[in-house]
Every structure is written in structure tokens, then in C-alpha cells.
Length: 320
Image 1 (spheres, helix red, strand yellow):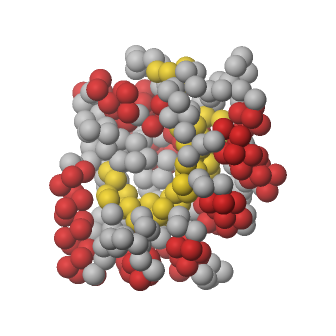
Image 2 (tube, helix red, strand yellow):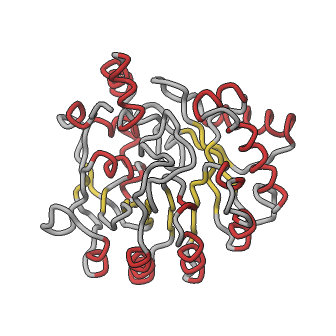
């Protein structure tokens, strides 16, 4: 795999400082039941990195001590961490909003019986990857059979009340482009998704998030292999919009890796660009118990243009 950080290190991206921290985005491990081309984590079935119980308990300590409002769980497939249900239940008992970034197919994997029911019982907000409403495109990006299993999972979630008015169970979908292009209008694409999924499969959901593919890890390496890396970076920079700077996710979020180390966002985590807390060059979750990251300077590189191009991009979709 081609390393992309050397191509991104030198940047003229504007300096940023964090606002007030309200979200911990925790990567519970890089193990995943899928291997997707666009994956910026390079996750897959062979990855062994998994967050241990001691670190998970520290996550809970930080949520309580800092009175944070949101716990955003990522992977890999976060549900593959053996302590996933423990963490979710404990965080919910603190009154914390919990987001599960689910790849959908995990709901039908052997050994994960009752997972969807558990998520519903805990009122977990499910943000699910579905890169297209057409089978051919999904299977091309994520593997044969993924679309059919994803549709089945969405129908299972709908049956539990997810995505339905008045249920309180939030179901969001995530779209990533198929290649080195900017995503289309989030508003228009959401209408298309809702129409197509309802007409063909009876599926309903709350919102669609469109996310720019980051030129790092597996996707970035594929760009280098095809000679498209420089062109994609030119595209991101040509569509930079200054107004998106105030809403990028790193302003209110901090990312935690499977060992408990801190990063300003999930993308920086994958590039090995640690967040600073005080004078420490590599900060750990334990330091959040006694120190603040509010107003800290955010580590930047050229990939940051991905979050500010066009309508903008974050884990919550478009910014504009």
C-alpha cells in the first residue's frame, strides 16, 4: 500500500482551533467483516487491533467527568469489539447520545444475534453505510452480496421502529462517491434515496449524509496506483470554501484510537497525526480527565481540503 501522508504533509490549509469539545469519537478497533475500497481506516477481517476493557472504562470516565453529550462509535465494525454492548449501555445510563457507525451486514453475521434489538432497546442512533441505492454499485464498492444483506438489515431496523416518525429511533444513511469525484448535492440525493428505497424495498430512514472520500489509506493508495492522486487533490482545492471552516467536525470533536490516544479527527488518526494536550506531543485519553482541549490548535495537512470542498463534509454529512 502506498503511504499518502508524505504527499499531504506540506499544506497551505488555514490554521484551526477547537471550539468547545462535546463529542468523543471512539474507534473500537480496526477489525471488520468487510473490506471496502473507500475505507480510510484500511479495516478488514484480518485486523487484530481491538480496544480493551480498561481503555473503554476510561472512555466512560471521560464522558462523565467532562459532561460530554455524544459518544460516536466507529471501527472497523465497532460492534465486533467484545465490550461494545457494555460501553453502549453504560454510556446511555449517563444520558449520553450514542451513535453506532454500522456497516449493516454485521447484523446478519453469525454470533451477532439480537444486536439490532439491543440497539433499539438502548435508543442508539444508527448511522449506516449504504453507498448507493443500486445493487451493482454497492456490490462493486463493498463486495458481492453486500447490497442484499444491507437491505435486509435496514428492513430489520425498520421493523424495530428505526427511521419511523415518533419512534425516537434515528436511522441515518451514508453515501460515499464511487471514485475521485465530489459527492452530489446531499439534499437532492437524500430525496432520491428515500424515493428509491421506499418504492422498491419499503425502507424509510431519517437523513442521508454525503461524505467526501479522503485521499488516505486504501482509497488514497488506489489513487496513487492509478496516477490520480494529484488530480484529486487539485479537485478538492479548487472547490475549497472558506465558509465551511467554522463547521468542520474537528471544532467540537476529538478522536480516540483503539489504544486510547487522541487525534483531532478520525482522518488524522489514520495518518498518525496526534492531537496535542498541553505540551505533550502524543496525548492519551487519561489526560482529558485533568486537562482541556478547548481552544487547542488542530493538526492540519492537505487532506483537510476534503472537509471544506464544495458543500463540505463531516461525519454528519454536508456542512453547507
